[in-house]
Amino acid sequence: MSRTLITGGGTGLGAAIARELAGVGHDLVLVGRREEPLRSLAEELGAAWQIADITTGAQGLIERCGPLTHLVNNAGHAHTGAVEDWSAEDLRALLEVHVVAPAMLARAWAAQAPQGGCALNISSTLATRSAPGLGLYAAAKAALSSLTRTLALELAPRCRANALRVGVVPTEMTQGRDLAALAALHPLGLGAPEDVGAAARFLLESRWITGVELPVDGGLLL
Image 1 (cartoon, rainbow, N blue to C red):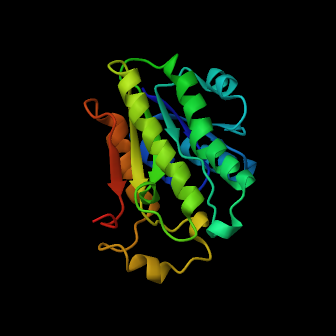
Image 2: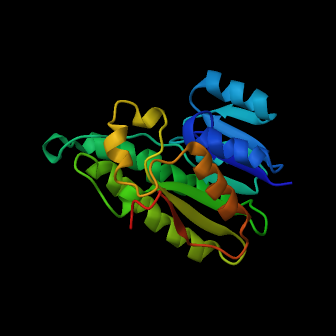
């Protein structure tokens, strides 16, 4: 049985990935900062859960939750702001969550992962196609894409690393945005969290795929 840790695992895309993997028998560890949604989902799925700030103590987190077959780096937060409003603090906060924490978690996970294990990073179409007001978030996701490729090269042949480039999916992170306008940018319309869950399962289970950044975007990048 695969044991899989999912960061940001209590809500949104993390919860959808957790439900998909639980349905095929993964032993799950859900990690996040909010106790109520984590506990509720863990009870629903029969999963373990851990309150943690992923920007601190990656080694200890992996040791407490392991041994782990797979790692899903899903936790993140959005940022909007025009160039004139950017600050170094904003960029540092984004890089800590979207790049530094995934890198440190992957390093600690890889030290104990078995043959065939996979690190899966949840990225964004913004990694290659930025948008006004989302430049810092896009830069952080672009760095995560680069990290994914490096992990794939350095962890082979024992382990794999892949990423999902996700388009606009209605979750808590999209609240307050004009979803109708965003839907028009996607030839297939907006996705659902379950679409991301299915793609995550595919990459985790595909033993001969590594270094891939799979678009799950309804055609946004076409």
